[in-house]
Amino acid sequence: MQMLVTVAWLLHATLGIPVGDVARPKLLVVVHVERQESADAQLLIEATAMARDIWRPYVDVGFGKAGAIQRTIEVDQLDLVVTDRLLQHDEPRGLGWIQFVNDQPAPTITVSTRAAQQLMEASSWSGTPLRLLPASVRRQFISRALGRSIAHEVGHYLLRSKAHGRRGLMRDHLTADDIMEPRHGKDRLEPDDLKRLDRRLYEYAATMSGDRPLS
Ligand SMILES: [Zn+2]
Image (tube, rainbow, N blue to C red; front, side, top):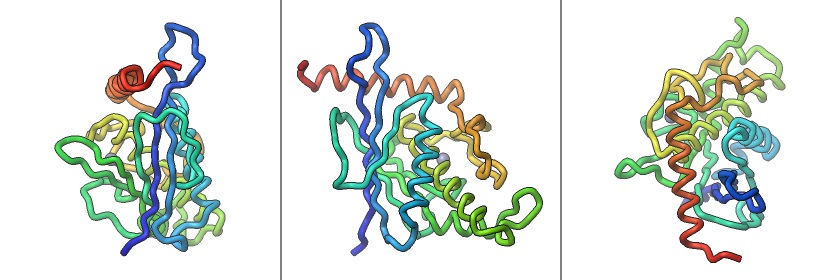
């Protein structure tokens, strides 16, 4: 029996905002690693920090290990599995995946440390094979590949969409240069993605106002 890492994304509106403002959603991600030896803790901290930074313009995202999560207002949950298995599903980037059932995203995303490792070993950066570069650079490649993959799969979940665009976070292809890029200019949501996200956030707001008593 496999031990799965569970990552939960919890979305809730920020309290105390002025009347009339759209509530800024907060998503909590709980991370469990399938096999502890497949990824060290610091690498995952760096990867999740990158995913958090990519989403910061849209949704506040916090990560934590299962069992150490302080839940406040919870309207949704997403599990993240960090695995050393390779991708079985039809995800062009191969680093991560999410299943859809009846056109709805399953509440689990998975990223593969082995896929990131294999991509690193097959890639060049600025004309030099990454496998010939210092360990610190190779490690950075893997943490950024995982971070961008987590952010991308979260996008499939939050946007409730399998669609890939030609640009932005939901593009279907990442080059080694994309992965090593420290800034997030190419990881933004495109206009169609923003419309989908808005619809999702209004669904959450409606759920919260309907299901939770006023305090
Ligand atoms: Zn995708």
